[in-house]
Length: 225
Image (cartoon, rainbow, N blue to C red; front, side, top):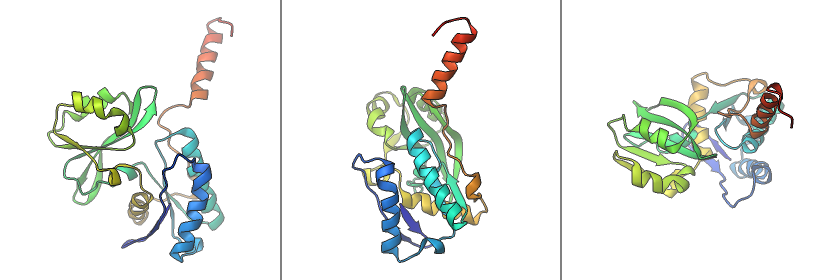
């Protein structure tokens, strides 16, 4: 959780100790509000990393942002690019990868151009080999970051053929400050939405939806469950 304006990160609280969003998010928001000396009513907009990520985590984050926005009558700014923006000073191709299970990663391809973060390939859930193959068409150094690096590092080191590097630990994970700063940019560009309209971006169907589709398909074909 963080509070930022156009010039400063006023307050930020980060914790990564295996506790869930439901345990940490609201206490963290309360803490950054207390230590910043800024009341929630003074905030112009609420920035949220709308995805990708776990279904439960995204729902908790989005529900919290939506609830605060509705209560305070404040707009919500959604961003999928917060993680990539962590290394916005990198002169090359930016590739965030997050673990998506089922042998896949959530990923996208970005590049900074004249101070703006440009999306070269939309976020998706793919096999690590598929995104490496896509990256090899760019004739620039690639930086990988995100929690997916921990799982995919060996594969990248063995198989990726282009020049690359991994972001250092302090820049490799999602940051509320990066989301807040990018959210401020989007807010000033008129990209905010009414809190009532906000919803998370999942990129793929939930396990429950997939299981229901399998069951319905089986019933239609005459199988008995």
